[in-house]
Amino acid sequence: MSTGTYALFLVRFGEILPSHHGIFIQTNKDGIGTLLDVRGAVSATGRLVFRCNDERLSRFKVAEAKGFVSRAQIAELQRICGAVPTPESQYLCTSEVGYAVPACRCGEWTTSAWRAVDGSGIVAEG
Image 1 (cartoon, rainbow, N blue to C red):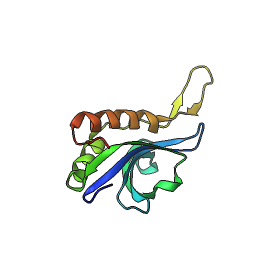
Image 2: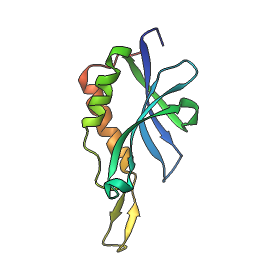
Image 3: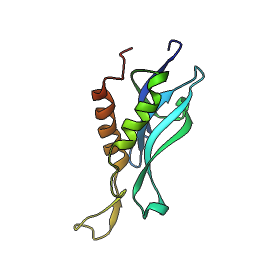
């Protein structure tokens, strides 16, 4: 990581369901950075909402390096991710079981968000 650039990772907490996915920007050599993800919010009636929170790289079970972004492009990266539609709910009601079952909707959002980020041209290969 050179001065003025930050490493980007696709990350996951947990090995199997339930797991949690997101995009991590490592802003310090000690592994501290920002996690861009979606999480359920009671205030949004169970809908998943976009969040940017401080996190530490060592907390993730899986961290796949994807490239680098410049410090000047962090706000653009957050804008791109924030513009990706969030899934309606983490719990899907299925006719087979008749009740809501958890689904890894954060993974769906992370895949869509990464496509948007990668397609924007702001990510440099490392």
